[in-house]
Structure formats: structure tokens, C-alpha cells
Image 1 (cartoon, one colour):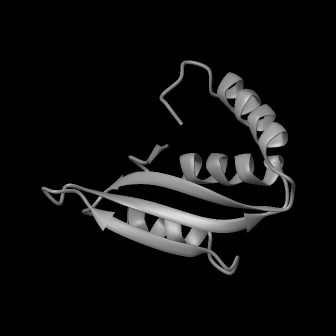
Image 2 (cartoon, rainbow, N blue to C red; image 1 turned 180 degrees about the vertical axis):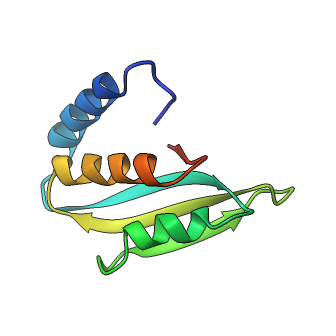
Length: 97
């Protein structure tokens, strides 16, 4: 997700794309960038806990940031967007891709 001036517009566009391109329930790949220092990686992982998610992390070349990729089965586009909202609201310094 880019840093849009209007997150609601972004989520509406994302929902339409998800409805048009996948049969639900479906696997969805979330990607986040978080600062390596601090507990943001754990905070993101906790949001997807007990969902059967496959989580992979990779540090940036300098080790300042960590990318967190989460592959998880979601029931519909609204559930996908709800997780984006939850991460944005609960994890400081996160960038959603």
C-alpha cells in the first residue's frame, strides 16, 4: 500500500481488484516493511497468529529494516483489508506494500 492521501480510496480500489482477480476464499500474500530494532516484527506476527499463516522475514542489506511476508488463506476481500487496517493501527513505523 502506498502512502496515499486517502486510505479509504486505496482500500476501495484494493477491494475491487481482489474481487475481480481471485475466487474466495483464497491465499493472499501480505508484505510489510518494519524497522528491525524494536518489537514491530513480533507485533505484525501476532496479528496473524493462529491463522495458519506462513511468515518469512528478511533483513535489509544494512539491517535497518526487515521485510515481513505473510502468506495466509483469507475468506474474502473484506478480511484482507481488515488485516491491513489492524496492522496499520497497531504497528508503529510499518509500511504496507
